[in-house]
Image (tube, rainbow, N blue to C red; front, side):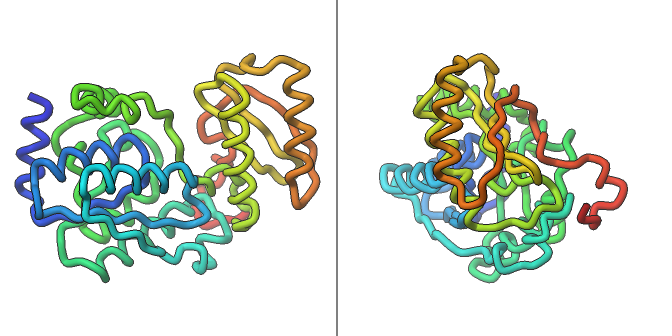
Length: 267
C-alpha cells in the first residue's frame, strides 16, 4: 500500500528531476522513481566540499549500476557569502542555490527526498523548496523516515536501509563560524577515520570556536587509550590547532538555537 501511494504520486510528477544528496531518503526515491518512470526521470547531484566524499561515490556507484541519467553539478553555495557566513538559516541559502541551479538546467518537476518526519523539524531549506515549487513525494504519500527505510529494505537495498543519517558537512560547524572549505575537508577526513576506527553507529566531528568535538553514539564506542591515540592523530591533521574533546552524540549540537529568534543573526 505504501509503495502504491508513492507510485501514484510519482506518476503525477513526470517528467521529473530528483536532487540526490546520497542519503537514504533521496537514494531510495531515486531508485523507485527510475523504475516507475523509465526514461522520464533524471538525477542531479550537487558535489561540493560540503558533501561527504562517500555520499558522492555512493551516488555514482548506483548511477552506474542502475543506469541512471546522472548530472553532477556545482550549485555554487561556496561562492555565496550569505551561506559562508553560516547564520542559523544557512540551509535556506544552500537549498536556494541548489534548486535555482537545477531549475536553470531542467524544466522538469523538481523532487526532493524530504520525508514526513522532516516537517516536524526547523528546516529553512523547506522554504527554499516552496519558492522553487519542489515536490516531496514521500511527504505527499505520507511516508516517514522509518517508512523510507522499510521501503529500501523491501527492495533489497540493505546498504541504504541501514545507512546512518549524514547531513551536509557544514552542519558540523558551529553557527556563526564562517564556512571554510578547508574545515569541511578536515571534517570529512576525521569522520572517515572515526568510522574506520570504532564501532560507533553515528560519528560527528564538530568544529566549535574553542575546540574540535568528536561525538559518538554509543558514547563508549572507544576506550580511553583509543581516544587518546585518535586525538593525537586528529591534531596532526589540523590546519588550526584546537583541543580535541570526546562527547556523546547530540543531534544538531553545533547549531546555536538562541539564534532562532533572529535567523539572520551571526553570533
